[in-house]
Amino acid sequence: MAPRLPVAAFALAATAFLCPIAAEAQCRTASTGARCVRVLDVPARPMDVSNVAMTSASTATPLTRVGDVLPRGEYSIILNADYYGLPPVSDGWVYMRVGSDAFRVDWRTHEVLERVTDRAAANF
Image 1 (tube, one colour):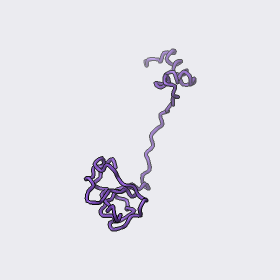
Image 2 (cartoon, one colour):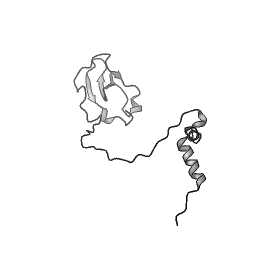
Image 3 (cartoon, one colour):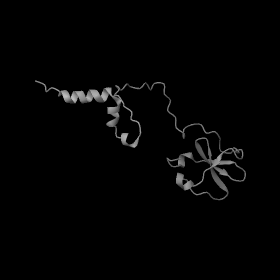
Image 4 (spheres, one colour):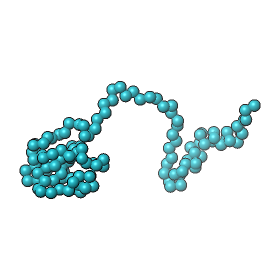
C-alpha cells in the first residue's frame, strides 16, 4: 500500500501555489524587498540547429586588411596591451580595434601592419 500524502502538507502546497503572498514569503530574496519570480518546469525541447550558422570573431572577414590606411579618429586605440595578452607597443606603432579585430598600426601613417586578433587573450 502506497503512503498517503498528509492533508496538512497538501494544504500548505496548495496555499503557496494559489496565494502569491505566501509564495513570496518563501522566496529567498523577499527580505531584501525584491520581487520573486516563480519558474515552472517546462519540458525540454530539442533545439533545431540545422539552419544555425556558427561564427567566430577570429574567423569572420576583417573590416580592413594589411596595407590599408585607417581613417583618423574612426577607430579606437587599444590601451594596456598586456591585459589582452599582446606584446608591448614600441617603435611608433599601436594596437587599434577595428570591429571585433585587433590590428598593429603605424601611428604616424595609420597603415595597418598586421592583424593580431589571433594572438590576443580570450578577454579581447
